[in-house]
Each structure stands twice: as structure tokens, then as C-alpha cells.
Length: 224
Ligand SMILES: Nc1ncnc2c1ncn2[C@@H]1O[C@H](COP(=O)(O)OP(=O)(O)OP(=O)(O)O)[C@@H](O)[C@H]1O
Ligand SMILES: [Mg+2]
Image (tube, rainbow, N blue to C red):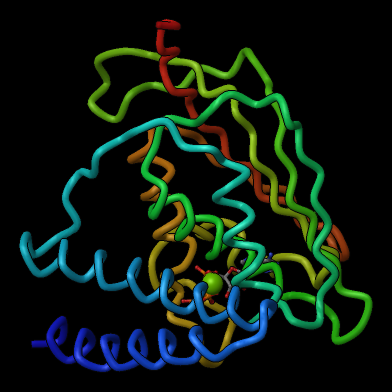
């Protein structure tokens, strides 16, 4: 029932965005298209939950992590991180990640949203970074093998820092210091990282909080 009730207004939002898209200036057209794409992403998520009662294992494919971060950045910059400066520090030579694009968008949106919510009203900065780092081995969730997770994605902010009270169980559900927070954001992040066969770490002090996500690369496809 909930899925149904969410999907109904979504189709209205999607239709309205499409109408706006037709009559919009170039800059506004991109925003209208973003509304449509994000609505589609939410609708796909709901359809999966509807069909299985839970979110099933998704198809993993080669995903360009910079494309994922661009989307996250656009959503953030036009919404919850409107007042922040968002800085990109990317390694353009990174190979593709093995993962699911929609889930990766979700994962990094949650991290960037937390970063934005920790920022001061002025002078807030969020750095999105990527790098290649060999050496880290992750044990598969079924314990059968160990694999590399060399793609490092970093989300850093110069906000208040993580409160001592929540540090030790930061990734548990319902852990929050916000009056309107659900405390589910980082629990979902941890689950998505685990599902991707990745690893997660953080470091935090006032004016410098950094979350690092390590992800496996997609297997190389032989040249034709
Ligand atoms: N970048 C950050 N800087 C400071 N504190 C953070 C940061 N990220 C997370 N936290 C702390 O961790 C808590 C849990 O984060 P989480 O995303 O799980 O839930 P939430 O943000 O409170 O609620 P929701 O994500 O459901 O809106 C936050 O309430 C906040 O205290
Ligand atoms: Mg959150």
C-alpha cells in the first residue's frame, strides 16, 4: 500500500517535470531532466521492494564512479547543499567500479547529505575525491574468498565533526543526533558498501570529517 501511495504522486511529479522540460531554458531543462531521472530512480527502487518485499541483489555491472558522483553533486548542489562549495578531486584514470549505479548514487547521496547537514551556514565545503589504492583486501560477505577493493571514494566536509555520543555505533540503525533524523542514512550506507564487497572507514575532528569507501573494480573486458 505504501509503495502504491508513493508511486502515485511520483508519476504526477514526473509528468510535471516533463512539461516544464518542454518549455524551459537550457539551464532549467537540465534541472527538469534531473527531477525526471531521480523520480525514475525512486520508482525503480519501489518496484523492486514491491515485488520482493525486500531489496533483492541487483545486477552488478561496470559503473563509471565519476558519472555517479556528478549526479550526486548535481542533486546536492540544487538542493540540500545549495549553500556549500563542492570541490572535486578526481583521479580521471580510474577504471570502472563493479556495482549498481542506482545503489551507488544512493550511497554517496547519503554521505554528502550528512556532510551538508554538518556544515556551518557560511564557508561550508564538501570535497568529493577519488583515487586508486592497491593493498586493501576485503573478505566476501559469504566468507568464501578475499578480493581487492582498490577504488577509494572520499567525502570530506569542514563541518562540526561527529559527536562522541554516536561515534561507536555510527552505522547502527536509528542512531542520530538530529531532531528530524531517522538515523538510517549511514546504516544504509554500510549495507550498500557490504553488498558491493567494499569497505568503509571514517575519521572525524571538528572542521574535518572524512568518510572513505573502497570498492572493487569491474573485471576487464578483453578488447575485441
Ligand atoms: N559528516 C558528518 N559530520 C558530523 N556528523 C555526522 C556526519 N555524518 C554523520 N554524522 C552523525 O551521524 C549520525 C547518523 O547519521 P545518519 O545519516 O545515519 O542519520 P541522520 O543523518 O541523523 O538521519 P537521516 O540520514 O535518516 O536523515 C548523524 O545524526 C550525525 O550525528
Ligand atoms: Mg543522514
